[in-house]
Length: 312
Image 1 (cartoon, rainbow, N blue to C red):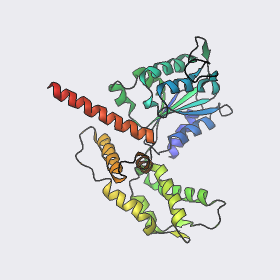
Image 2: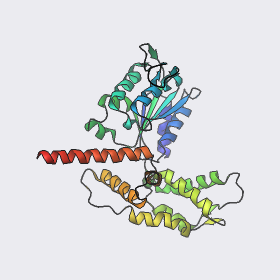
Image 3: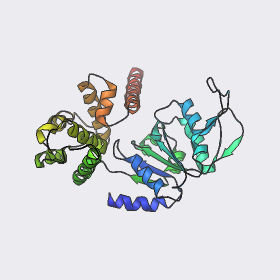
Image 4: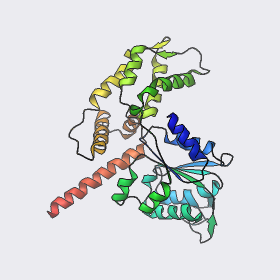
């Protein structure tokens, strides 16, 4: 993480587009905030937009703005994020979920700095640094024709990869100290530390939800624990049982092991919460819409396989 911080300091001095990749909960948005805060644009706006949270039509309006009467409900002219962030930074979160037709329009504004509001033929300009984040392998999505190759290379000027927590497990102790210190500030007497046995459990856990999941565990422990020490008995039901049941994977295909593990983990979590998507998404450390999109993708792949088998 120290190496990453040094890399980000160099990247921040540039005006080039950045693509931040990493699993859900690793801190990709914090990376983007760091880049903006240490850049020459720090005194200008930084706006964020989740590309998975809106339909294509609404996302286009949010990005480029719209004129009054451009569509039903457009009762006034509205500026988009590119106009509002002029001179600053725009964070495009979960960029992989953007529809292909809108990707073409995004490519134009990134290359030329030009765009039109929805319902307008007037070309406008904006000087915006784009930072995109994704928890997917965009090269694979390009190969599947679900993401434009030219847009990928336009975004991937300065690539940043954020490691999952299980690959930097030595950070757990410092993160725990930070989260506890932040939570107890101004709240009076509260548990101040995890016991050595509890810390051992934290270091042995695989953290599918990454840093976000660790933060949730710390907050939950501080709420439920009595006394000055958080014992292993308090957190063991949250970690030990999940580590046994949720990571017992079935057959994994060569070259697709990570995708197969992710799908099996999501399916096990959905089963555990009786198909409740909100609870499952929270446990996994991802958004409900992201979870829904993954399920939709698997259904589409299953339907395509059935059609191919029918032809054969």
